[in-house]
Structures are given as C-alpha cells and as structure tokens.
Image (cartoon, rainbow, N blue to C red; front, side, top):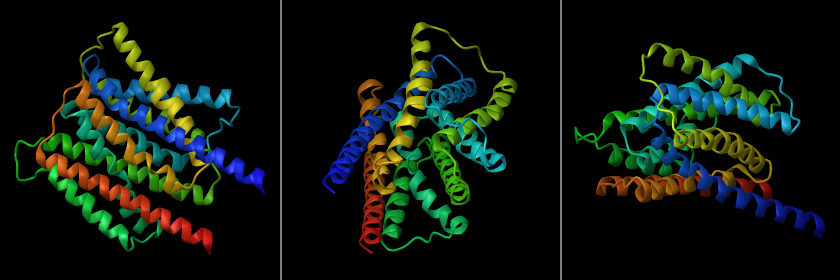
Length: 304
C-alpha cells in the first residue's frame, strides 16, 4: 500500500514539474513565433511549423515504438481542419497583426469555448460555477477587444478568438472520437499535423508571399518551433495526461499565457492598456474558477 502511495506521489511530482516546464516552453513559444514573422511570411511560416512538427512527431512515435497507423480517418480529417489548419492559420495571422502576449491570452480562452461547444455536441451541460466563469471570461474578452474603440486592433483580436474557437472545436471532436475509439493522443497529433499541413500548403502556394529570409537565427527559431514546441512538448503533454486528472493538467492553461505576457513584455517590450490588464485578470480568474470546479467534481466522483 505504501509502495503504491509513493509511486502515486512520484507520478504527481513528475507531472507538476512537467506542467512548469510546459508553461515555460509554450509561453516563450509565443515570443519566438512573433520573431519568426520577421523572417518568413505568415502562411509559409504556418506550413513550416505544422509540417515540421508532423515529421518530428512521427520520429518521436518511431523512437517510442508507438503505432504509426492512421485510425478513424474521417474523424482525424475534421480534427486536422479545425485544430491544425484553422487554429494555426488564425493564430499566426493574429500574431502578425497583434501583440504576442495579448494574442496568447485570447487564444488560451479555448477552455470556455470547449465548455460551450461540448454542451450541444457531447451533452455536457454547463452548471453552477461554470456559468460564473463564462461570464467572467466573456467580460474579460470584451475589455481586451474594446469594441467601443475603433483603433483597438479588432482584426488581431478577432483572429485570436477565432483560433481559440477552432481549437475548441477540435478538442470536442477529439473527445467524441475517444469515446468510441481507443487512439494514442501522440499518434493522433502527428497525423493531424500532417493532414492539417496540406490545406496550409495550398494556401501558401497561391498567396504569392515574399520569400523566406534565411539566417542562422531563423534556423534556430524553426528548430525551437518544431522540435521543442511541437515534438517534445506534445510528448510531455500526453505523458502528463496519463498521470494526473484532467483538471490538474488544465492548470497549464493558466501558466502559459502568463509566461507569454512576461516574455513579450521583457523581450518585445509590449505594453498593455488598463482595459487589457483588467480583461486579462478577469480571464485568468475565470480559467482558475473552471479548474477549481473541475477539481471539486473530480473529488466528489472519487469519494463516491
């Protein structure tokens, strides 16, 4: 019994360290991606990130001796279009026209859109404290978007929220798929990136974008975006999901935009208005409340 307790404690400690590492790496990735746009146009950069990430993930699958076979191709196609093609294109364009820190906050509202979409698609109703979180996050979004201010960067804001909704749609589709089919998250991510890169390649080929400005700095940036941010971080994320409850892993959602804001302020010297600061705090509070509600539900289920 004690051995099981020790093993559980070690697993949770490992997962906690993993969440800290992921928050740091994925938070810093927003600054790196913003810097990459100085060397490559948005559609070409998106394709390089997605396709390079797919190759790195398939290599990871091979090294970990996990199956490479494509499962549920129709479902994976829909997931790829939402969670890869749509998400990555809108996210990159949002970064192109807006600040890295604010874009990260907008994109990481994805849990609230997942919550709202899961109701009609999966039958998971929004209850109690979740509604308070919804109101808080939507109010925060209004303050960041500033619809009353015609110079508030509405294009970048809309693209960031669109990216969050695309990711949420993909998440709901993944949950629906995994209800009926046992599929490896790492394998699913690899195939989604590969399939999702095809529409991006088509758009990049017809967009008539300027050529890439190849430098040693840009090569280093792409290595970070593909090998570190995609392959390593996704392997770490799937490992964490196998060791802790979903509510605990979701705390990553809180850490990543915070790191992105700090890095964008320190490295890119991005500033935030008073409305944006209040909006960011409201969104963070709403996400924290969502995690707390999930923790309570998980605890009640365990005790029952």
